[in-house]
Amino acid sequence: MQDIVNRLLTRPSLQQAQMAGAAVRGAYHRDPKETLTSLASWSAHPENHVRIASGIAYGVIGQRNRDALAEILPFVERLANDTDDDVREHGAEAALERLWLAHTDAMWVTTEDWIGEKNDRIVQVVVSTIARITTSGKIGRPSLLRLFMERGLGILDQVTPGASASVVQTLARAVDAMGCMAPDVVTPHVLRWAKQDDPKVLALVLAIAKTPYGPLCAGLDLKSVQTRVRKIRQAAEADAAARVSRGDGQVEYMQVVASEFLIRQQSDHMPWAWIADPYRGCQLRCEFCNARTNSEWSDDGPGGFVRRVTSVQNAAEVLALELKQEHMQPRSENAICLGVTSDPYQPSEERLMVTREILKACLAAEHPVIIQTRQQLVLRDLDIIELLAMGDLVNVYVSMQTSVDGIRNKVELGSSSTAERLRTMRMLSSKSVPVGLLLSPIMPEITDDEALLDETLRCAADAGASWVTAEVLNLHGSARAKMRRFLGDFAPALLDRYRDIYTAGERIGAPDPAIVERLTTELIPALAEKHGLTDTSRMLTSGREKSACLIRT
Ligand code: SF4
Image 1 (tube, rainbow, N blue to C red):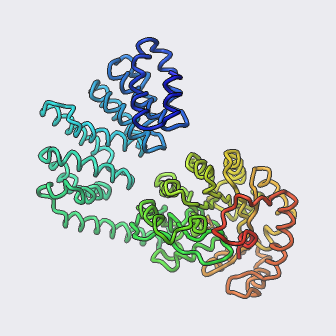
Image 2 (cartoon, rainbow, N blue to C red):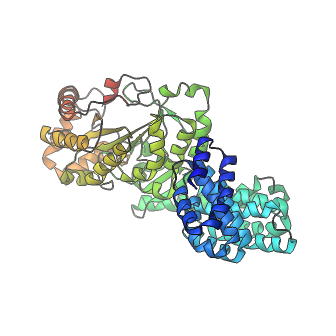
Image 3 (cartoon, rainbow, N blue to C red):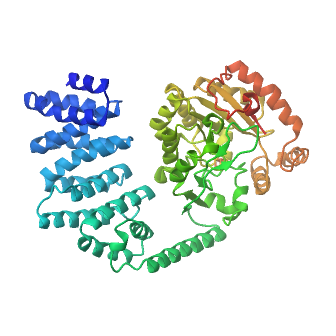
């Protein structure tokens, strides 16, 4: 088995991986136990062609040996959940196809069990394999093929409600493949979906209409579907607006489709050239948040910032196109930043994974990306971030205003604790990901005490941060009134002082320049020096002065 891997590693390619996987059949006949043990390590091998080969091998072995299924299937499921698209397509789908054709009943039970978990990657592998088998010509008898398609469409029925945007696209491609082969089997299902009121099901119908099979779907009244989608969306928006104006309710999730995604950044003090925020609105509810002013300029209204989270459904697709454009060259001067007007790892990201898809697009284009977050959820994407870091294509700024929880949890109501953020820094730096501490915002008279700052920088340095970037609190728009309300409860004695500090600045909402000067030219640089937070060798700057980017104004 080791010889097979060594050969594959000298010439890694899809063809070699397929040959390596097929060659395992002989080894399994000689020593089944030893072969399955080796395959388990192949399925977790860092080289993706070895993982692909393990999928081929599992298919080849399982196809002939039903008794081995129980041992094989957990590893095929692992491959179906692999982060690499090629491993899922050429490894997991290839294995599933063989196993499904050989042990049809057992595989229906298994795949129905897998899709119950609602894991996007696994669902996509299952759905794509159904389409692959249907169109492969490997089920010769027409009656059996129709039965297979009927049952496959039943699986599509189960996964469509609640499907993410990327799953909807996979479903549409599968329906297209099956529909072009046998429209008489598929069309009744599509017409039934078109009568439902579930927005996800209707989104699938609209996606199907754009495929080559769309015009073959006799009786599909597209206009009526579009009208119903519009009405459902309007009703949802009206309901959200009513709840926001009543001041009650949960977070409302909205999705928009964008034709442009990147926004130009002009300031010379920011290390990025482009803003690429996956969300408008932020559930983390920081008392000092200036980004909330963005929602004052939109239909969401000031309260909507924390109650309505709008995600850009097609962010990764649009970004991938934008990154190909000439003006994005040279890449080193066009770093993009996630986390300027909202946190890219706020709770909605757990489910929607827009940020994750954006990172994948950056990795595919080898484009530099800066991530700013207060959330430990960033560690979920460590697999991609690590790969970006290998090419010096990523900086992660973990934002903290202080490491003292007694203050932090009064001003930052929904973000990760100090311990979680320090653990995040530690994990990232242990994987050689360049990490900066974003000391943001320093709140005059609250977190600008020298001892507090000293302790915060010490903790960050111990956790592996390489440099520190500082930002003193600005209070624009409604952020000012919000801060007054907060101070009224938290530190009423500071109300007058804050009025003075924020009327002495040159710009509306800017703090007294004397305070900024003391912090950014004296105290923070001295403390950074003391704790060794001065290694900016891997800092991305988009061609700007590093020293300017360390102090954001
Ligand atoms: S995490 Fe950032 S965007 Fe979100 S509320 Fe806090 S300051 Fe505002």
